[in-house]
Amino acid sequence: MLNPQLVYLVQTDTTAGFLSQNAHKLALCKQRDIKQPFIICVDSFKTLQTFTRVPLKYKKEVRRSKKSTFIYPNKKALRVVKDEEHLQFLRKLTWAYSSSANETKKNFEIEYAKQKADIIIEDARGFFEDTPSKMFKITTQKRRRLR
Image (cartoon, rainbow, N blue to C red; front, top):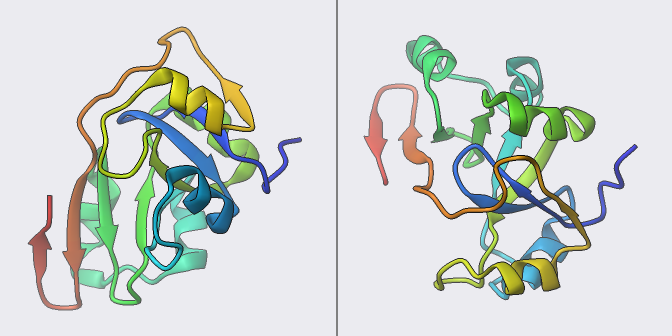
């Protein structure tokens, strides 16, 4: 069983990232403001429903989207992971705060990431920096792309 208080370095579906259920410890690793919220990665739509309610108008879009993060009306940013290799890890936690494995506003450096993580989990892909997830802010009536 994984310890939810530790910071894990894993290759996510989008880029090399830090994952943890401890947002405070994750913010310290990233050297960023503790008040700045993190994306929450979840392993299923059932888990997603424990955090927020998806507006009826966007249920189909959220269900079909890949590598997309949605900021919901309750101000939580959630992403349902569909990449099977990343899911193998995430299913053990069911959900985790997620952030790229680099210092805030800087590029990915493997040595920095390995130094800051409590546990390193490397799969066959290794670690690499890739494009971040698309991000949308949705309300009950409209959707706006943020990145």
